[in-house]
Image (cartoon, rainbow over all chains, first blue to last red; front, side):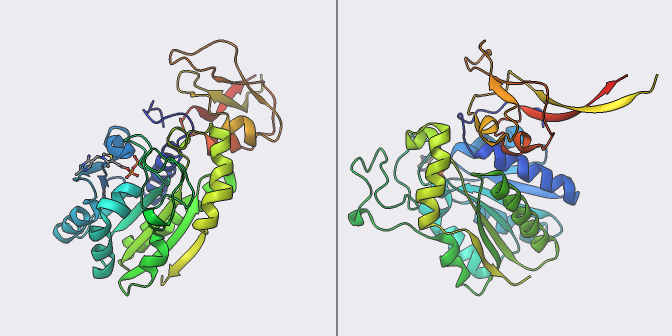
Length: 233
Length: 74
Ligand SMILES: Cc1ncc(C[n+]2csc(CCOP(=O)(O)OP(=O)(O)O)c2C)c(N)n1
């Protein structure tokens, strides 16, 4: 991949973009895939991906993906969303797309804050985390972190749900396998698949890149344990 | 002449944003920050020229700056 992107130093989006592109090449579905870009840092995904993309309003990619999949059932439809996009403003769309069991793939990049707008609290912000809107740390008045994988695995419509991270080479390779499995799930016509990837946001967290790796490992994985939550493949 | 293909680590200095992830994961200590700046104002990473070619630097690079390349030598 020979592209210079706009993501900040140490941001996980770059790694996840590369994994996605590698998986799409390996599955040879570049001509068939339609990706839906979110609103958030990855809004410019379509500048970097050399496959068909559409842009949806904030939080609406699962709804748009469901519509595209119904009109063009032989295409592979994937959404790429941040945590503010998927779990906050788009919570409704995500939940009902999963509940309908739409045959789409959701790539959910969880960086525990709203990255693009400057590091505000997201539903996935972990307890006691300092953000610009929770300067003394998130406490119970701000609610509890939403665990999207645990929530969706209870729905009948979902087929494959896994949470991975990109904080170490081993976990990056696992993420790639998970993405491949999720896209395969759709290719085989099984139904809704979601991969949640814990990602670094050094600028949003006010840490340096090395510290942000540590933070994913120590604080985020405690709230969001990694693993396969549902596999009905 | 017997032509041989030799692997080497190619770093696009202009893409590097100096996060240091590759330096952290390298088992051979084969990468370091350069003294000079690139056009974005970062100290890009430089390959010291010898390592086991494990490719971990490529795996963790978020900026598509690292490639493992085949180079023809004679
Ligand atoms: C309807 C609407 N409301 C609010 C916004 C402002 N906004 C832009 S990006 C963003 C947060 C995105 O955060 P996230 O989905 O976590 O992605 P990240 O930037 O962290 O990758 C918000 C609230 C918007 N663009 N549209």
